[in-house]
Each structure stands twice: as structure tokens, then as C-alpha cells.
Amino acid sequence: MAVVIPVRNGETTLADAVASVLAQELDGTRAVCIAVGPSDDRTREVADGLADADRRVSVVDNPAGITPAGLNVAIRATSAPVVARVDGHAVLPAGYLARAVALLDRTGAVNVGGVQEPRGQTPFEKAAGRAMASRFGSGDARFHHDGPAGAVDTVYLGVFRRTALEAVGLFDEALVRNQDYELNWRLREAGGTVWFDPELRVGYRPRGTLSALARQYFEYGRWKRVVVGRHPRSLRWRQVVPPVATLGVAAGLVAGAWWPPALVVPAGYLAAVVLASLAAGRRPATVLRLLAVYPTLHLSWGVGFLAGSPRGVGRRAAG
Image 1 (cartoon, rainbow, N blue to C red):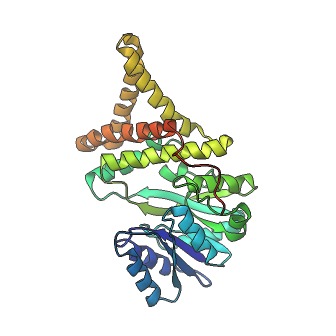
Image 2: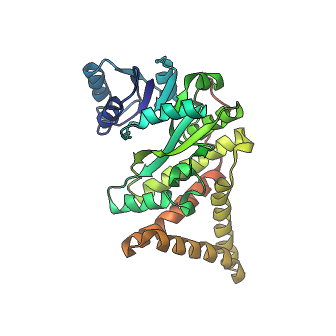
Image 3: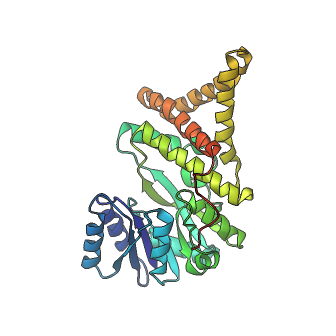
């Protein structure tokens, strides 16, 4: 198995991520390839130290600095028939890789993955995690909030068959965000199955401030617009809701200045946010944070989607 880890500015988390990979009990050999992008910290020194300490670990450069380019250069630097993606801030639970490989064999899927489990450390991060893991926050995406095992449109991270990856041309290096979803769309269009297993759970630390969360979800929405432009049939209802809600709230507030009945749309959205926050928050302080987090997720994503593609983004980059 080849485990590929794209990392940038990951000095404080990379060693734990690699240690969690090397500690996995797995039949056969494994190679860990770390693709290091231009960093402002000691990420490269940490990566080189890990490679010096264990011959199973290697390091390659990712001069472009973006995730899909790092994934591709690491994939090309390895040769194992199964490729597992691990992020530089992720820590795999025991048995993760062995279970994923067994599922590839049992299901015939081309990609297997599971749940992105929010593990906040501060009160704000914990509130953001609750919102991200709720249906009101993320729609019907199983990798956010759990669900039954089965075929899905996308999963968190992923353990892939190399032949399937190479057949569709690896990750699209033009996509700064949403490259996982887009790759899984191409894998499914080629006849493959993407399999979700709720037992495959990997921790994720949410953004620590409202402004950071807003920037993150703005970028998610903007790059989703790029993917939808390339693959219109990939659009799902959960991806339509944020831009529609954003337009409805904005139009209602503007029109409400002259025609008060138009305020029913923003008022209805506010009522939904309040009810969802009360249901997920339990404690008053968490409820108050969720009252800010939910609109940030929805409206930032919606504004990003409506803003359209970043300047200079064209068709798929050559992989």
C-alpha cells in the first residue's frame, strides 16, 4: 500500500499523522510519501527527519503548494496497487487501513472512505463541529454526519485502487478546493463505485474563528461552482440550498424595506437557524455560537458559489 500525504505548514501535526500510519497493522508492505509544499515553518525539516528515521517514508517536493498537485506527485512517486490519502493534520485510528483494504476487496469499489469527525478543542471549534456534523449544516452528505454503509457520491479522504486513479487521470490540479468530490465524480462516471463505511472515522479540527470559517466556506462554494461548470450533472440538492438561501435572504431584506411581506423569507431562515441551534446546542453558550456559525456556513458558501470561478481558472489541468 502507498499512503500519500500532502502537507504545507504542518510542522506541529505531521509527525503524529505519519506515526498513526506507521502504527497500522496491515498485511504486506507500505510506503509513505510526503509531498511538501512551500511552508513558512519547519515542515520540510520535520518531513526529512521522519524519512531519515524510517526507510518506509519518503519526501517529494510540491512546488505548486496546492493539495491536488501534492497528491499527484506523491502518487506518481509510489507504485503500490492501493493508494490511501491521509492529510497532514489527520490521525488514523487503529485498524483504519486494514478495514479499508478489506472493503475494497469485498465491495469491488474503487474508493472507500468514511466520516470526517469534527474534534474541536476550543468552545468555538466544538460548536463549528456540531454544525458541520448536522444535517441542517451539511445536508445529506454522509461523510459529515454518519449514516449506513453503501455507495455514495463522495467520502472523506479515501483509499483507492491505483488502476482506477490512473484510468481517470488522477486529481485535477486546477482545483484548489473540491478536488475530492470532482475525482469521485469521474471515478463513478467511469463505472466505479465509491463506498462509504461509517466505521472509518478520522478526526478533523474545525477552524477556530468565525472569519476563518467564513473564508473556508466561501472557497468551498466558489470551487464547487467550478466543478459544477465542468460537470453539471454532479450538482446535488444540498449544493443548491446555500445559494438559493443566500439570494432569498438578500432579496427579502432589500425588498422588505419597501414591501414588508418580503421579510418573511429572511425571517423564516432565521427561525430555522434558531430551531437548529437549540436542537444541536443544548447549552446556552453553544446555542449562541451556533446562531452565528450556521449562517456563516450557509451564506459564505452561497456567496462563494454565486461569485463564480476564481479569475484565470479554465478547463481541467493536465495531470
